[in-house]
Length: 225
Image (tube, rainbow, N blue to C red; front, side, top):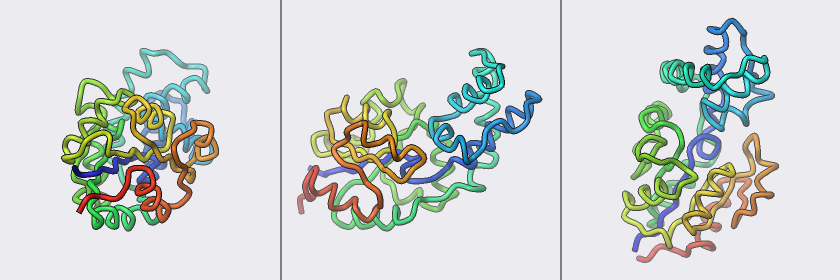
């Protein structure tokens, strides 16, 4: 049975915070609030998604309402899709490690809470879409992470089974998804919220992508050949 390594996208494989914040600030400017969020202060907020950025910015300016968040969420997605890769970049060593895992025989896919079409667009603009055998986004299924079903669907598309899977992520959402699915998780500690990852008690922490092949083999074993 094929062993599989499934990655989160934002904050795990790629730093997308700059483009996400730009889309949120487009919305805030449209509201007459100016640029509310900054990269230095809010990179971690950006990686929690569009609605979280809108919520934080509106709370910060005393303008929060759920109706405003819901009304501007599609505006944010449209702005983000129009400029999705001005600042985003793959983390150092990620693609080299992914190619090494594939060469060893692991199946490699992505399970993200970014809408599938935007995730696909981003990966294509970054030039790495073809490296991943499966992609499941926030709207691929009726549920999203931390429900375990998107992870299970990613694994099915890779031709694997859950007992032989590991999830690599950067948040409590990823940790809770792995826990719900009964699989080990590796959380990256190099992102904006890296200092908080140890408190989530994953099976392993990763500071650099060069560490991942050994962690994967330790946690789920080597692929069968």
